[in-house]
Amino acid sequence: MTEPEAEDRKPQSDEARSAFAAPVGVTSSDEESSTTSEFSLPKGLDVPQPPAGDAEGSAFSTPHTYSAKHAPPAFTPPTGIPIVKLTKEAPWQDRMRTMLRMPVTERPAPEPVQKVDEAGPAVPRVLDLTLRIGELLLAGGEGAEDVETAMFAVCRSYGLDRCEPNVTFTLLSISHQPSLVDDPVTASRTVRRRVTDYTRLAAVYALVDDLSDPETAISLEEAYRRLAEIRRNRHPYPGWVLTAAGGLLAGAASVLVGGDAIVFVAAALGAMLGDRLAWLCAGRGLPEFYQFTVAAMPPAAIGIALTLTHVDVKASAVVTGGLFALLPGRALVAGVQDGLTGFYITASARLLEVMYFFVGIVAGVLVVLYFGVKLGAQLNPDQALGISERPVLQIVASMLLSLTFAILLQQERSTVLAVTLNGGVAWSVYGAMHYAGDISPVASTAVAAGLVGLFGQLLSRYRFASALPYTTAAIGPLLPGSATYFGLLSIAQNNVDKGLVSLTKAAALAMAIAIGVNLGSEISRLFLRIPGAASAAGRRAAKRTRGF
Image (cartoon, rainbow, N blue to C red; front, side):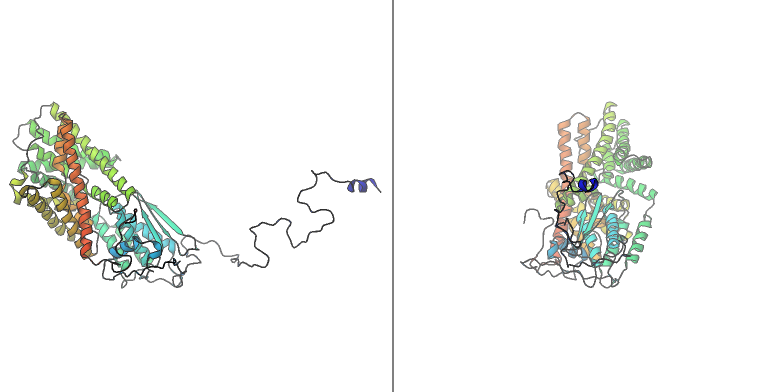
């Protein structure tokens, strides 16, 4: 035996032999693997593999598991699904809101109203269109629930069921799951800029209404084209008209709280000057907080100047009129409405925005009032404004205020007359209850705002449009401008306790306006035919969290 052969026959150490090596004399078959994973497929089970040339595809391509004609069957719970009958006579807002308040498993199957090809719509493109529509609505000041309703209507109009939209203050997202075994498709979009334009808002609502109409077939390309036209459309009123409308609004508000012709002109000049200063700050990129602070200074300065020159006018009415043009009533109503419908994150963000705007107004007015008091201006926080002495003139002023407010909101001309009359009715009800009936201002404001919400909701359902153009401008005469001014004046004169009481009253009036508008909208639905009311589902509350 040679020396190399003897070396090969020597036993090897443990370090040289693997613990998983087969013992000497045991041969392993080539067909079996020495190490097998427990997750490997058993022998004989063939899994179809996709073709080698089939790439993953674009994000806008239709998933291979989705078919518009042969959709995967949905899961049916053991208890069954109650039958929900959606009345075709009801507006699409009510039908979509009813389904949004149901669990996904209880929603009826969609009935596609738009023409699609046999392969079905491109799911990501439908979701992208839905997000773009929701972005315009949320940027225009629409409530979170109404934005979700519109997004849900767009998805179902293209045959996508099991969709879940989600709306927050600056983020929109929507998720679609074809079946329980398919991967969901989720898309999101950030809202970075909010522009008040109710004409654009009405155009978006008209687009959603056409998409939800079974007699109107709109392809995805046509919907994108119309949406692009809505984005490119200019505002209906130029800048100088908005500035003049702001001045007329402040003048009408000053007459509303007891001012005369001189006060009207002074308040109008102060508001227009403040508007131009705010535009200048906006052009320099300053935040809105400073824009409101600067815009609140000119009306207060003009009121102080009239007092120092001993002009026999109510200087407090000048400052109050300027505050009416700045108070964020639209954002307040939207924030409270989101909170009442269960969108607490969005409501908190909106109310926080309102608080920042209000603090900016307070800072601007307080700075001017402080220097006015130091200069010897005789300002009386207990001064009566005498609103109840001229009821006819006050009603005319309230209608002018609503008219100019509608112009500032860039409303369509067809809605201006309705909202002007609605504002006049609101002030008439408030004056009759508070001054003639000697009822508390908070209760009177709540009832008047409730009528505004009721009439606005009925008008919007009659025209299949948003309720904002019919309600926001109509609450203008009810805004707590005088209570805010007298509270700030008391604080400037070191009477903090009295000032806080007046500001608390202003906050109570603001909350009464917001809650009244929402309550009026909900009451209006009691007179409408409710989808699904005759079924087992009934009318569900918004965002039920306690099982009621």
